[in-house]
Length: 368
Image (cartoon, rainbow, N blue to C red; front, side, top):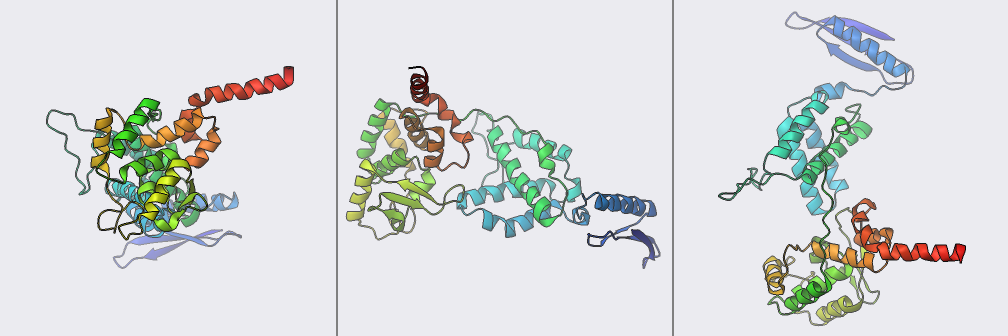
């Protein structure tokens, strides 16, 4: 049952307080300047309660997107995102949304406004560390955000809205779900040929950085990410059990890297000959943080004559070799630490021979 109470404000104007009581729901209240608005809200709220689809929504009229972002960053991000890099990216995305739509009430964050923001993301350069757009080099076009990057911005916003719907009850639905996202390009698959691999390893052996060779071998052996490799601490290395345990990964879960073969030999040698007292396996000179290898890495690539190759492509190389060695998509996903199979389907074509052999064995068993 709904009741409307007329009130006289200090300035002499009228306001109308609505009180809706339906058994099984907490009392809902709201105030309006017009009686017609009060009646409409009372009717809609009472019907929604009786049909079992009512969610408390006054918060969506009082709270702005800035309020939502601030609460999410303070209370959810520290719990949900353990990986520092992932945490920084999510915060960066949400602060961008706050700058664009922070003054809007949550009810005014509509798909139409989000589409406008999508177009802004696609047509403007990304921001640098001080919040200004990256400047293009003379004679070059400014580098814009890729469709994949724009999809990540929307993913961060969508997760926040889902939390506001399911946990905070600030809003009834997630408007991001009604926005068409940019089409992402097919995932890059650049991996080393046998000759490129041999040339790169030889160049890394000759590097002035004694850690470069074991770092590259360990990455090729495990398929781990650059950040995961460089942040390995000695407490995570178990030479007896042939494993390295990663406490913090990109998806926030612990993962074990198999430490076998040549990689095991190199890490064991580093353990025996530790000179710098540091908790890191690959420390910088003062031992306080992991080292930087970008300069020596680029020199090694140049010495090996390898072009169009990034450090992350070592991970693609490990996955590609696994596929060509007969590993299933599920096995590759487990080794790389992916929660879903979608990311590793790019390697499926490399395991065609393995798939053909499996089908051949099945046919032989059925038909002789």
